[in-house]
Length: 133
Image (cartoon, rainbow, N blue to C red; front, top):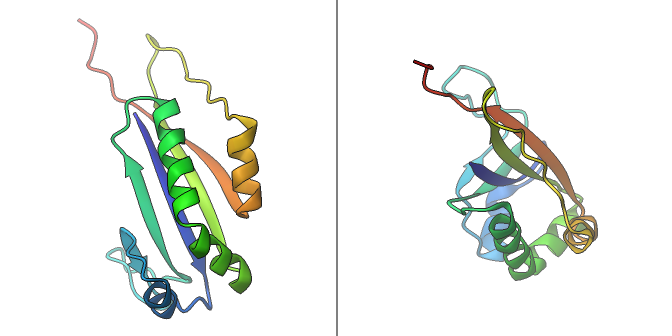
């Protein structure tokens, strides 16, 4: 399984004004000072967009590449405001019967992230396997 999450956050980021000005609707929004369901106070304001449902790593990259080109004005506005963003690519790694996947990023995709000032993070999550009989 592959899932990508693009997150934008800073402590002093006026997320509501930013999203309104740029007419953008993310999947999730949070604000500095709010309290999570776990009782922790949130220390940044920001938003995130989740990309899931693609069957291959190549399809995920194609979707991300298209999205980043589409939201270029938004990326420029974030750079002007010096608001950080992270693209986290998460994938599952199987148990003993599976090989760990290797993710190879094309240089043009990495260049797009650099130009857009987006930090790349890779997250690996253990998959659950049914018990052997």
